[in-house]
Length: 112
View 1 (tube, rainbow, N blue to C red):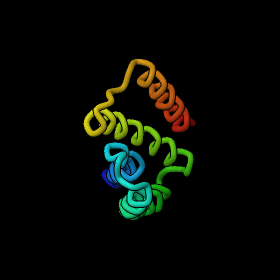
View 2: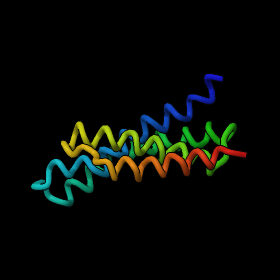
View 3: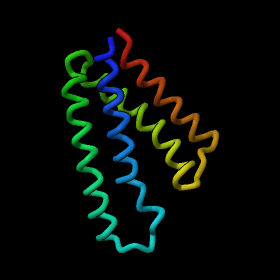
View 4: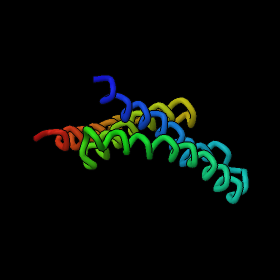
């Protein structure tokens, strides 16, 4: 049972790194773009070191579409916290509504 949780935990950790790689530089808009790209690539390396094992382990019990749906929901949850905490941009009702529709789509992926 616990092994079914490992892919989700690895996806959670990888999404934290990737969210910083994709959006962390927005807090430092005066930094040169080339530096933002280089730092983002460095952070993304750690993300790949977690994402690839998550998908490899997860493929033993989940289909590729299920792994992708799980990843999208985790990404939204991580991003919601990141946007509010790190960027100081809390989500509005329409953001939450849009994210909820994506969660419903992911739920559908897990139905037989």
